[in-house]
Length: 81
Image (tube, rainbow, N blue to C red; front, side):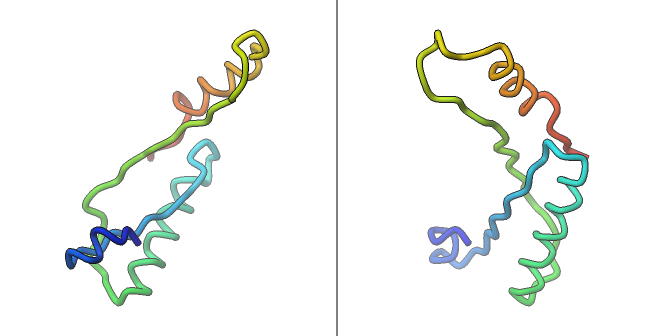
């Protein structure tokens, strides 16, 4: 839960899922439903923030083509359905 929203009387469950995997969206919704049920709520989803991405830290000279491709795929191929 986001403490600032909870303190203001709002509920904001935060769930994490790997949307780069085909089963990711379904797993996300199962986790979300479980969070809502744990709160005694059955309201549904109002807002979804897809904050997908990965990062490789280090000198630019050490970034491989594979590193760059993986980074680009994490955004372009994340499932959203």
